[in-house]
Image (tube, rainbow, N blue to C red; front, side, top):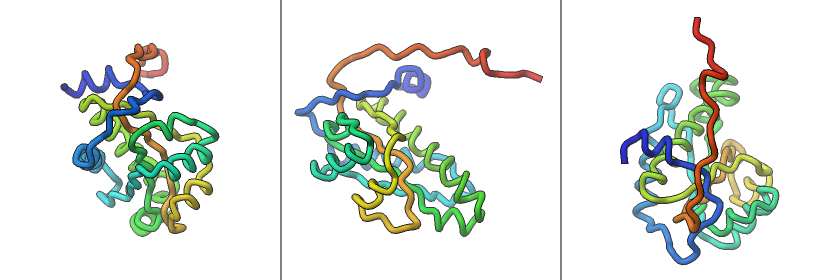
Length: 172
């Protein structure tokens, strides 16, 4: 699949095939793709927690305000950032901006690579960070940024329409 097919074809998936697992080597391949993202000063502050444990996935559902599809995915990747690494390179701007930008770029690579492999994902940003941090026993300098359920889609659904970039672009 070429990059444009992945970009234009990718969509959020919230229904996963309950019998088809994602092999560990494929998860590793996706994480390798995520790590090809750009990062401020090449600090690569992203950190990944790969969750297969059903009780932890249920805890993430509770942290994510009841989004039950998270627990239905065979794999859940919690993408975090290392605030200490960002701070050492860029101070406050590193922790308040670059940390988020870097992980966002890695997440998008992860989503596109997963789609290219026939997998579905959903970028979940609505969650209680403190609950997720406590559940995963994260140290204080590691901040969870997104929860990404990952699995084979159970349903084929059309992609929602997108607005034209001309609606929100200025050329000068």
